[in-house]
Length: 320
Image 1 (cartoon, rainbow, N blue to C red):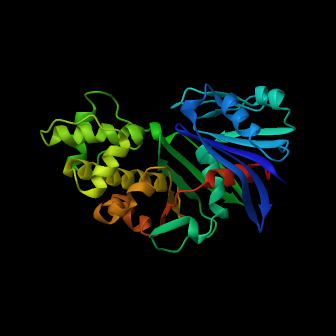
Image 2: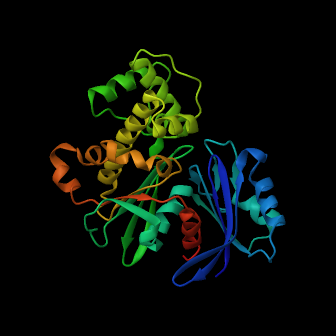
């Protein structure tokens, strides 16, 4: 059935109409807007609706970056990194929806995994998936999202969490030195304090202090551009450290969830710096789990291409 789907992140909001097609979904009337241009979700949603050239479906699923609280009226979410509140009951009244659901954005991303084709991701560790095993997805963007997907009797079940706020763990002496610097401004240092857009800047400043150099006033895209083009060795170091920390966190997610069906790395940052993955220790850090490294060898690892997978997952949510 045709439905409205939305993926609301800390930076961008994505809206579309999902139409079933060939066992998956075709996204129509797709639009991406800057969240900072709107006072709240309702305003951004109105903006998209006004541009439609077809009647709006009466069913919707909204995937938002934040923990979703269940309520008798359908749930609500406060978006941690944006400050927006979204309430299912209010939206149903305002927009006259026959059916509306709120889910976490990485829960939606997890639901999309069985629908993805080979063109939707790059293979980082090419080992066979264990059929019927759990899958995990995590990714740094405005924040760090983490979710799992389990299958039972042919049905998929999302394991939504807030792993971005779990504590960041060091794996090397360099990691420890960087975390000790980061602890001067935040204790404890949690995953998202490093593995996110703003986290990239936090890590850059720590790398500069570790090298005894003053940090420039850089935004996340500056760190990425300078690190990729080689114009700033400290930015390049930062990106390598970022990928190393991400590899460790991905391995942790695999262990927590038992993800022998694969770990998928998403978010907006990794696709932009993917060229540096071979120069990093991301895969080794993913595998380096002591006595269970042999078990980790059986876990495939993928990098999601930039796209609109969470919108597909939002449509899948409405199938149930």
